[in-house]
Length: 438
Ligand code: SDX
Image (cartoon, rainbow, N blue to C red):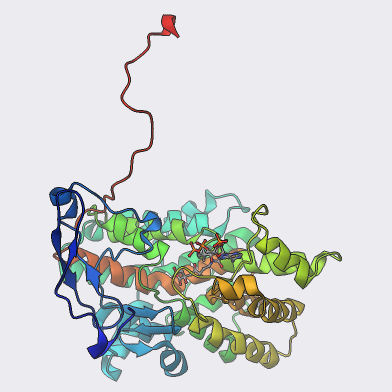
């Protein structure tokens, strides 16, 4: 029963009749969404474990950061609806909100922005770090490695225990990730690295480092800055998604914030997760380039269990309704292309695919809708980013969410080291067979 407010379950505990039971298990309430049955004593008392691959039905923590209602397509950061935030806020303000739980006052926002912009420079010794990578290196590999690497310049944050260190580590990562991303891109195209300009806003500075060249430092088109700002807002957090759960898992062993976030980047890179935005564009481009490919043949492949092909950018572990971010991006894509006086045949293909899938029984039955990745790549492309940078952009957006969850996990008295159990289905006990007897 997905409940809110007064309709939520009223039982304070439930009875589970298993083995030498029955056992009384406590029920934890939530402010919005499902309550949770506390199974922490179940293994010791009833000598059973629960079976839930991917933790798809298991709450691994209590969190106050983000709320998703998958059945209605609702997404809230610290209680504020994503639609309002995307319309009125800025990415740097959303980062503050996710980290500190409240919208900043004007003075707090100004101080936060100047703190961040004062730290966007990388230690000069990091240049040789980028030089060590081959030009063809995927920027996610560089981002992941560099995120862990920069912690070696800041010993004080290696094992942050006090609020000051945690705060400083968060600001360092948020300040420096766009510089790392831009330098990874410049390395891949053989152009000189551009240094951050503290006079620019957070997003404008990133675009400056991405596209400016020595001697040519024209300001970035404000409409491009605004478009990317909205995209980063929409990617900023999404409760216990695969990469955030990874950040929490790694952090639960008391690994430092930088190492935990780097691990989250590895999870994000997968095509079933943040790598989907690049996979969507490759899918649309393949349809565009293949004279024999049609919308129907593409959907047929997606439905064919013998074909590993999936409709990238469709379906979601939580949403059984339209991903509210996809809804915002669907219209945003048309706006951005119109404002840039561009058209993109891939947008036409995406819209035809969406219409066909939403009228196809296979997708309707399984409640498969477009997710955040279905349209984001088209906008990133319109803004001039190469598809290999799309997941990097997702990581820059998701960084405040990862850090907010790392801090919440680190300061939660319920936190234990992440150590799931298993059901063993291997060989029964057997004796070793000496080589000469095999
Ligand atoms: C993100 O978790 C988050 O919050 C993630 C994210 C975030 O902000 O952090 O929202 C970002 O990762 C979005 C998702 C991006 N990935 C993709 O677009 C890849 C394509 N989508 C799928 O691979 C899939 O939908 C997942 C991975 C997203 C969700 O997988 P689930 O929840 O494990 O669902 P499932 O694999 O159990 O699928 C249920 C059924 C299956 O069919 P049956 O076995 O019931 O016959 O739906 C089918 C699946 O085969 N299905 C698809 C499909 N997605 C699910 N069939 C074809 N194409 C698809 N895309």
